[in-house]
Image (cartoon, rainbow, N blue to C red; front, side, top):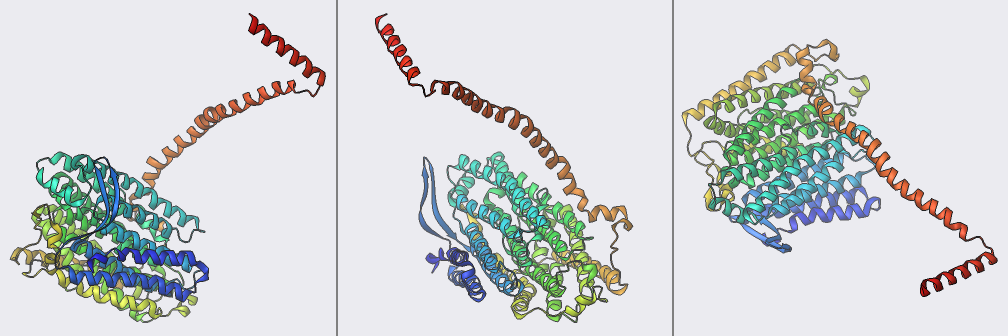
Length: 629
């Protein structure tokens, strides 16, 4: 069955081709069946391989691909525990999002196109995580970037949405350049781009720290773009322009975790690149803290979740930077469950509120949306790091490693965790508790979402609540760690990043983390539940400090002033002076010379027979003269 792993990405690709080519000729039911069925089939195959893997690693070669000089790259897939974890997340959560989309997008005129794009997205993401070398990974990497552009700007008649799509595409290109330079440097250093050969070379030349630090930083620049880390995080909140299922797909299970996967896959390089690893940890914890503070004063339900995603990605990179590779991947899995649940729950709320996304105009939705309410609450508890829900276990494992590596990182992580718990319960209380603050028409329209939307919510709620048991930190049985063990056993190096026993110090850290989160939740309850505080809608009335945070520290404005406007100015001047006065002038001059020459030589064609005879006589005499003299 493992040798048939190539079918896993092919199935969504077939779904994309059938739906894309069929278009309006296919009924919505058939589009739904093909779109969901292809991803479900890929999930079933992935699950089958998961049970057959037994810790082994298999390369499935499809064809020879690039053979130029010393560069030999096969078109092949690597099936190992790390790849299978991501395959299950992508296809499993992706399938639930597909099912949810049946209800959410049922009235959209481009229903077929939406499902075609979703299937193409799943195909490229699977391509990315299954590649056996950096070239195959890079193809998937770029394909995911293309699909994000198509999905974020899906409602392309809105100029603002188009701008958000272009922003995501351009910012990701900046990161992609770093990734591409890192791949080139890897080849120059090791004469190969296959994972096994590269990692073996790194292991045999471990003393060459300088080059590996440079490679690590270049790879991390690529990860910063895809996974929205400082300074390339600004595209992700704007990506909320896409339909809510797109937000769930991009922010939970697929695109934003690509950078985490790439660094985890390259763990052997980063273990031998201490400076690059430290940079990853610093940027990760800084991103987690920065995004968490911005989330405090956001009032758009999807924007709150967007900055939450940026913050949680920061924790994943903190884990990778301090060597907790299993912890980082574990948080990818738990985050996929509770963040997909949060976005889909937000979509259910928006659906019930007739498109309204401002939490200041909601309130009291607990009774009208009982399933959405309870599932959203489970996800909120999970992301806040409260046991026994999944987010507690994965975040605690990262924080434990951070504490052992650098206590400052741990302290900043705890602060970020408190802020997360506060703004998430602020969102929860303002949305589901208190009195309804919307219009009479919205109140009349309130209703629970259809089963196609609520069933995925329930499934994700179960996963968000119980998935943490797979990786109980510092327990004797760390199932997730044991499963991933062979994936990090590259080049005869086992990266042992899992604690072996439970200690009193770990117990104290866990207690402090839960206590801090609980204090933040109590504060949110006190403000927004007990005292029914509603954020002021008039921005002028809030304090300058709150305004700075609400405006996202004016980072977008800074980029606009420092980067975009200077580039626009240079482009405008280049157009006026180089394009118009030099290039256009040169082209026009050539055309004018030809035109002038033609106007002169055309006089020779007067139509007079006598003139032609005279010209022929002169020509014959001239030839005789040249011949004789």
